Image (cartoon, rainbow, N blue to C red; front, side, top):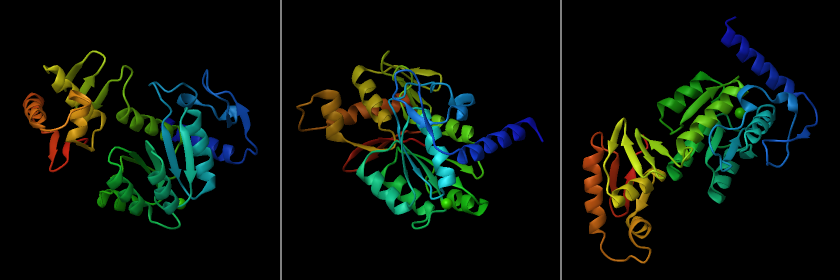
Length: 277
Ligand code: CA
């Protein structure tokens, strides 16, 4: 057995061990946080450390019908400081996501009611910037997810290592959330709102203040169509009404400075979208 395989096996064993470990006991989470429930001996490796980015408590939803998987999973994610909810059907997941915002879902493909691939597709259609991590038991299911381009950001096949899952979740949240100084990078374009600087790859962009503000706003909402009037009231004047010609001009300049491939899409009748892929 290779060292990697051995550590993966050890991790899976830990999950199994946790699954059979009886009642949870209260343990103290990271400094300043309220106690969370779990067993101290589950703490291992990266899961023990504080998340390496400022986490304004991400809201996660675990969609999994197998309690033997969902319970340790929910505990591991809660230990990372996330606000974790759990549902065990596709229908409950769709209702829950429609009712309250969620930053990321961990979605089992084999659900008892609505097919997980269908859940994935519907969630993606409604929430372009939400992170979706797929759990799948069979490679045929995985083929379906990938082949149908249902919109998942990442996937893990069962059995999976809890620490790998936690790391993947962390990576997806980091991609979506502001960095240490509110920095954000999408599709190779990085903005630093604190320093008011922006780069495409290694090339720094020379932007006017309004161009910067438009770019920062669109990147913060990457994947979503941001309405013209919202951009105008946010970047120009909160009491703005009337023409958005100046916005078109600024977007035109921004596009030229950003270069190819194009990342700013005009959404007819709505506004603009920064392409996240
Ligand atoms: Ca299942």
